[in-house]
Length: 350
Ligand code: SF4
Image (cartoon, rainbow, N blue to C red):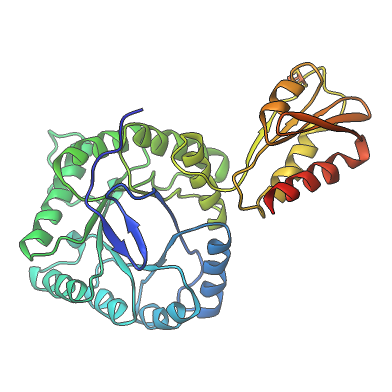
């Protein structure tokens, strides 16, 4: 695995991105931003599962006005997502947005971009230049790859902000196509010092989207690229946050909550491990501590994995052996598998 790329750090509210800080997990609300109560509720749900930054769409004046109320109701830093209308960016800054996401390319005249950059600088609010493959400028060079054109378009916008003496910059270059995304980030990572927000755009429903995002985000992280991640899924944003942490945990880049080791089950299995592992997974969502829990389907390979975990169970017909920190601590009846295992987990989580 490559060492992490050295990037400059920026702060969005009280969260540091880049400069060697832990990779930040973020998501985006899916409520109508104008509905302050629903949006605040969803942001709190996201905070409860460990989300560290949240972005809200600001498509109109009413949404920009709602931001002030949303900010009052939540403690997570809030990023306003703006397209086309620079006045919405100015209003969002006034309403207390901690960050802006915009594509200066679709904001229009230099004076408008300048007004936003000045107002953001005055408040110390960073701007993410967020380019997607689907919204490339019409000036794209047909002789270059999609990734090459994305990088060039982003560089134009970076230089535009730099020429306004603005450097609280973060960049994203997302595509649905994983190789395009990886090529674009690898290229820009060598050309600018700013932190990178990484993700695969419009990745899809959880089944497809988590795989696609994991391959894309995981490849980049393995290459040392990426300071904050967002998994985009056609699902409740909580799923995005959970998937984000699982990606980081699988590369040992962050610890967040428990790790569940469970066997795939096979012809040796004599109890319903799929159901048991699902129930354990659901309950572990409420535990913060990084505990390793194993649910194994037999006494052949089960004890080995279960012993390696902080808490584990190796299940056989009607009975299971419970392990804690490598020691066998007892035998449990099948009806008590879940409660006995969770009792040990909760004990360790205290
Ligand atoms: S742990 Fe046992 S039941 Fe589970 S897959 Fe391995 S051999 Fe099969």
